Amino acid sequence: MKRTSPGFIVGSWLIATTIGLVANFTLVGSGQLAWLPTFTFGISQAVLGVAVLALAWPVRSAAQGKRRIDFRYAVFVLSIAKAGIIVGSLVGGYT
Image 1: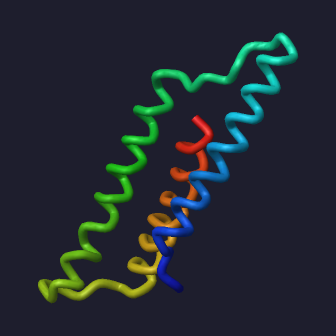
Image 2 (image 1 turned 90 degrees about the vertical axis):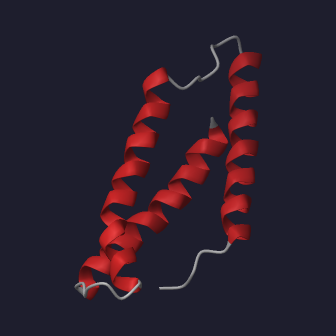
């Protein structure tokens, strides 16, 4: 698995922001309501972030040499974290 560069995250955020602005301007221009995220949207993103951190804590402990961990679990957690970063930048850029 390759590392996700900060440039990719910022680029996906910028693309999502541009698409979101164009979509909202188009909606408002046609007389419809703009899409606004609900209050629970931010809470759900925070809960997902805490869940990823809770899953990643044993991997961090193993990386510091305190105990061993199954490599499948580590790859699973890293995949979830990478997907969370990409989706978070896309959705966060759109809102």
